[in-house]
Amino acid sequence: MIYETLRLERRGRVGIVTLVRADALNALNERLMDELTHAVDVLEADAEIGCLILTGSGRAFAAGADIKEMAFKTYPQAYGEDFITRNWERITRTRKPVIAAVNGLALGGGCELAMMCDFILAADNARFGQPEITVGVMPGAGGTQRLARFIGKSKAMEMCLSGRMMDAAEAERCGLVSRIVPADQLLEEAIRTAEKIAGHPQPMVMLTKEAVNRAYETTLSEGVRFERRLAQSVFAFADQREGAVAFIEKRAPEYKHR
Ligand code: HXC
Image 1 (tube, rainbow, N blue to C red):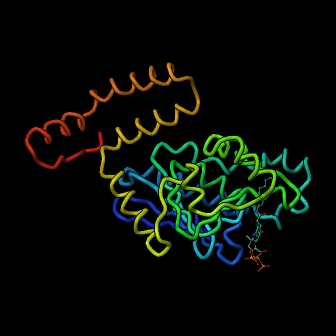
Image 2 (image 1 turned 45 degrees about the horizontal axis):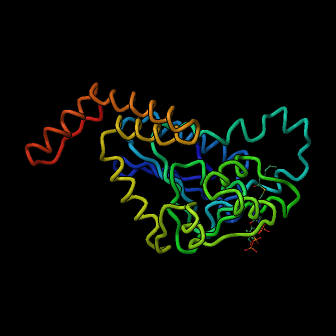
Image 3 (image 1 turned 135 degrees about the vertical axis):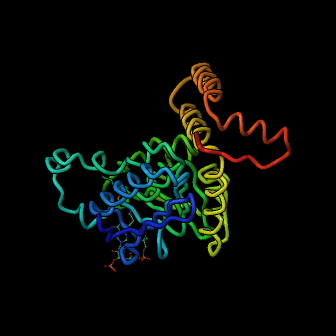
């Protein structure tokens, strides 16, 4: 596929996807979401890639679904083409970790896309919001559900009902983002973090991601039981032995990612 709306790069074991519709603040149109789905498929299938980064070019991560493309959509069209479900949620099914490196604006579908990633690193100029209501619609890509889980009901309700944006400091305070980084260092820091993750044994990274995600889908006792089964399974992997032996021999481990 020839990409028009994003750039796909590899830096060692890190795959970087940059949205490049900067003149439309990376608004998420059908083409972009198809390309993103394809790019994630490519990186997921690439055994040399251990971690993904999603970021935006220009002054936005993404300013939401493309309002111009949606303006005259009808319900039969939205239902018939399975709007959003068809091509927006590939990232939620990625087994490898995905870091959202949020530069500038992450609004509406852009905020939802960032929340579909495994964690968010925010530039100090990042701003988050669910302003759908200000353009006559409502969040439709998980915003009401994921934001409430991230930041709690009161703040999520206020954000979704008022359309207010929050800055990076507030987003960090309320747990929406893991860390704030100076804007000019965001990508480098995201790459450093992704390299660290991708340097860990790939099976352990995937198992750990699956276990943390289960915390949001089940009860505590079921989640702990699930974690226990995964944790017992680590002894099936060569990297477990290598990690322990390297520790005992006081040397760096040489993982085979299996
Ligand atoms: C299409 C968009 C866009 C969007 C910005 N642009 N956001 N185009 N869809 N979501 C375009 C503008 O039209 C403009 O193009 C260019 O990007 C620059 O934007 P400006 O508005 O000129 O910039 P600025 O004045 O700095 O304002 C920035 C902004 C504003 C506050 C972010 O652009 C804005 O309010 N955008 C919409 C944000 C939003 O409501 N998102 C939620 C969408 S709904 P031109 O060609 O004029 O230069 C959604 C989910 C829907 O995400 C779910 C289904 C129902």
